[in-house]
Image (cartoon, rainbow, N blue to C red; front, side):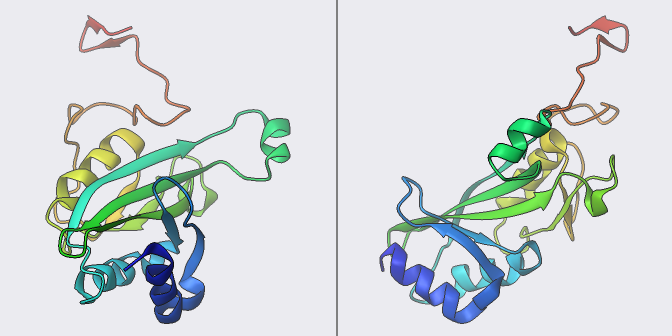
Length: 176
């Protein structure tokens, strides 16, 4: 099945919960509403014509623009994105799912954004979600063990957020 046909199936099934796409990109992507993520993922995994049975990785990206003039020119607000790289080993097709999130939950600075976990659908999501949480500061609701995986437990902040301030020392050791 080609990418336009996959997109048509998603549009028919989920309608307005599919909020964007670029099917001509090198890695074709479809953007879904965050609240629809688990349902869309389950459909992509279980639908016989699709069978996206492999989650390669989840990327967390912080699109933060400190210059309001520049942000206004490109007509977007600072936000975070999650990218789910999926493949079907059965049908030999691939797709990227994208979810956009506000940089802060409920627009309250310091409140980390949240997205539903898909670790119950793909076992690989467990560690990928922990890594995104640890480094990008996106919480995954419903995750069975959401804790740091790379940084020490007492590390302050999330190093891949664009506004992260690297500490000068950690437990008396200079890190900068």
